[in-house]
Length: 156
Image (cartoon, rainbow, N blue to C red; front, side, top):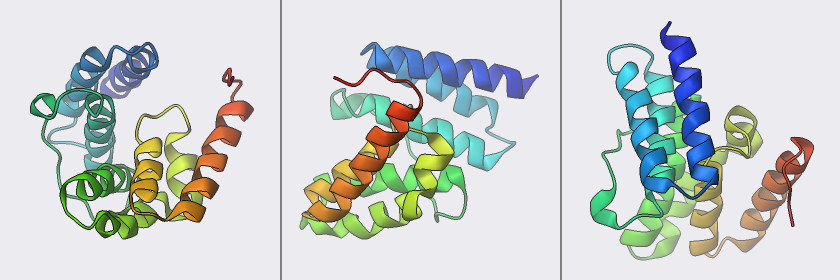
């Protein structure tokens, strides 16, 4: 039952995110994380990272908590993507978050796991941009656009 509810919450969160309803999307993703508080850590972390991805568009005082991660699973990589951007934006020099972003992306693994529909993948790309790692950011962004096109997303 939790798996069906989690899928529904994740889809709803993604839809709200796509329509610019970032606070609502963050709230839905946090509900999903709460479902797995004592259960599947990777799923919980994926929800937490998605929540931060939505909350990134809100004032910092509206950002929820974020767990620590080591990058060993899909949820961990999602949290690393968030942590990379957070580090770039708050801990000079901005380049300090680049290695976290690279670990998060893991040669396309994060994109394959979360797809271009996730609000998280782009955060790792932003971290690379802020870090001055423009070639890596360009390659990652191209991969995200290709994934979106392959999924039928309307790209202007």
